[in-house]
Length: 101
Image (cartoon, rainbow, N blue to C red; front, side, top):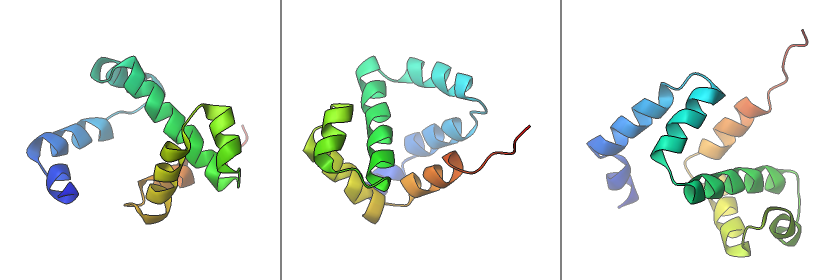
């Protein structure tokens, strides 16, 4: 069922729009118009959770530091380990060593 939802024309158009974002400022502008503040806060929290999972933090510590429920942390961990690879892809790009200028 999930694959069907992800393969609709509306979803493909959304993914294409997101893939055209070029800077963090553009992402901020687009996502703020697209999402509620609560949705953005939840996405930011999940992004923090996945990074803390990879650093080996306990679920309890992650919950304390982020305010995420242990249920959310478990879901994020599940998608990290058994999802489509999106978290791993972005983490590999986000944490790449940058050239010193």
